[in-house]
Length: 108
Length: 108
Image 1 (cartoon, rainbow over the protein chains, first blue to last red):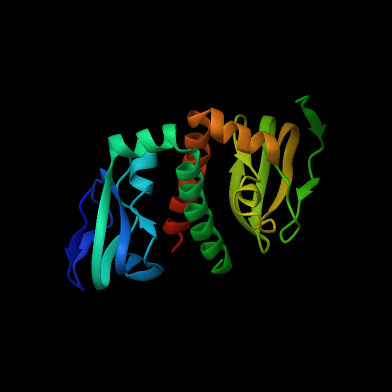
Image 2 (tube, rainbow over the protein chains, first blue to last red):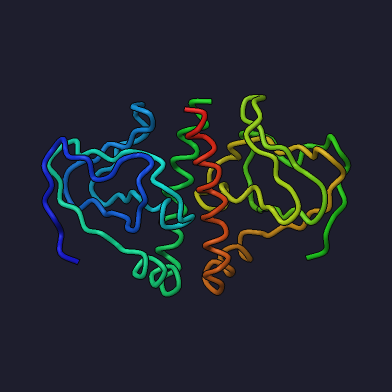
């Protein structure tokens, strides 16, 4: 999928919105926040927005472009295709989720 | 794998320990805590201990049997075999991780 350039300060999605795709950061940085509180910064090669695809619930966080970005999207169909065909992709998604959980644990 | 019965009050593992297996609750309940703070209760059909397998880091939480339990274990080799052969298992693990993340988000 063709990468899209997005300017700093743009909200990719907001907490509570429905979500039907995830994102891969090709260039730049995206900040994730919950109720205005910083949760994580996603840089080059990182992914975000995968949670709404996994459990089909609204966005848990707001994603805002921190520095001008290039992003590609993975829609629902592609996401499940990748999970089925590339176990390494499934493991990569799991690693990201675990990383965020451990980050939250340190804040407990 | 044959289920094991474990008495209420027993620690299955403690925060900071190395971990080489995950657990499936066949019967009973297991409580997860971080720094003594309750994180989640895992009941029949639930899993725990998957994080250390995914990122090969120490246990992020302590798992204590809340009511007499029957548990089966999935070791590292079996875990990666399941991820590779059963995409539904990979998705199930992801769902559990996302559920815990959302739970943490509500506490943010």
